[in-house]
Length: 231
Image (tube, rainbow, N blue to C red; front, side, top):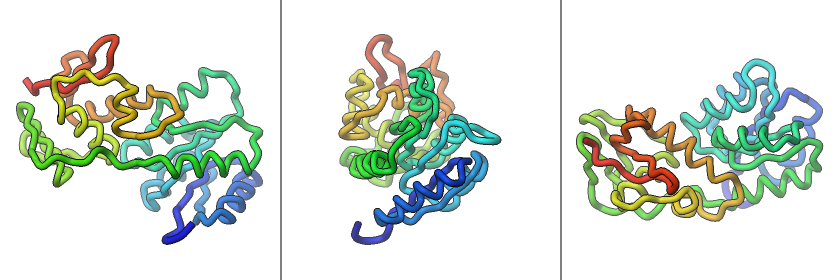
């Protein structure tokens, strides 16, 4: 890999496994940080701003699902969940927190590196911004400045949250399906499209929007989401 080395954060309480994963990622050109529990993982994710996070599902303290939820409030890093549980429900729950992919233990280091590489090739940038500030009641979306204000006060959004809001607000009368939003915001995708629901829920929370009312973002039953009018 050319240019600055991407940073990977490995969060796993199995020290030998974390060390093995670290050695393989370093061999691939990554800088690597490790953590042995969820709280430390969240703190390092906030402080170091990694490009990709390998997050074990079962951790001491807060588990991987809660750690991923917390990380998703401030980070758009790619998240690969590591789980020893093969039940499909655990995989779905993990992805519903905002994880991008999962690998079931035991896994080969080569497989893990291949999955990380696939994630890193996936574009994170949103659509090309328009020049027009869009207004929905007291909500303003400025695509060029990448700023959002509600009642004149700035709203801090992650890159993915802003990209979702930008897509919805660009065509406010269009009801987008999850697949359409994934295509517009995430690009090529092989994960669970319910990751959209997680980011929409975080977006609504930051906008002070009640999902039952849909003042800014409305749920279109059986379809997906569209912009509300802010009324």
